Image (cartoon, rainbow, N blue to C red; front, side, top):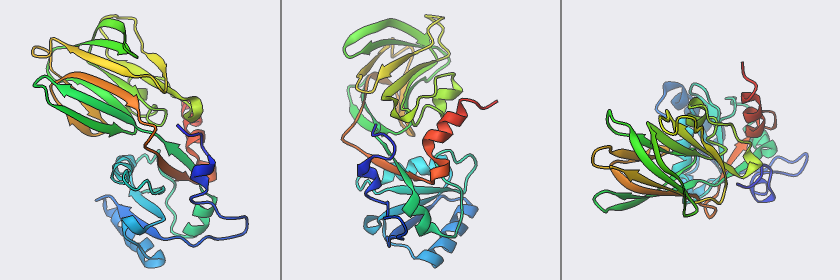
Length: 274
């Protein structure tokens, strides 16, 4: 992951001091009524270009819609400035109609590199998907999953009996990973969180922190009896036999934040929430 405020991300959006930079904007909105109304109001005020012609994409919705927008923007890698018209809005800025170009002049970029999941199903078919937050292994039936876990080709756990397992990026460490008691990871730490979901054996295993260039291999044991699905953000592959996960540094996604609401600061605050 490129550290926040990197030259490559900043050059795409920052203006010189005292200068308001002209840029072409595209507005996208979730199906929520408030998001659609906001998109209409902003389009009347600033105009709206096609996605493939925009300098910046303005995403209006919640965190789920922001993830969806990031995935749809993968071929273009256009910077995305989100404004919250959903519920939590952890990945978005506060909604305000006024002074949008001025906010973009001051915006601080965060460059994210997603996880690439490669799956082989028990029928032999293969597939790939990208995950900005996490890749999750989830049991499909009432029976627990049995997984064999390797890191960089070395088996580290011969058998993990659990409801599931996930590998989270720093940006995703405050999402599903946190809800199953995984650690929050600073954005610039170059670390991934490997976190079990309701581990039964080994009972005391609470997960691991891995370097960002680690290759995680997961083999499903007894896949016919204990089927497992693999989920990259919202792309699900059922009845997998093996899964390989690694960071894809060739893919870069840029999120823009108001300086006083930067993602790094939000993640720090999250660790001291009551």
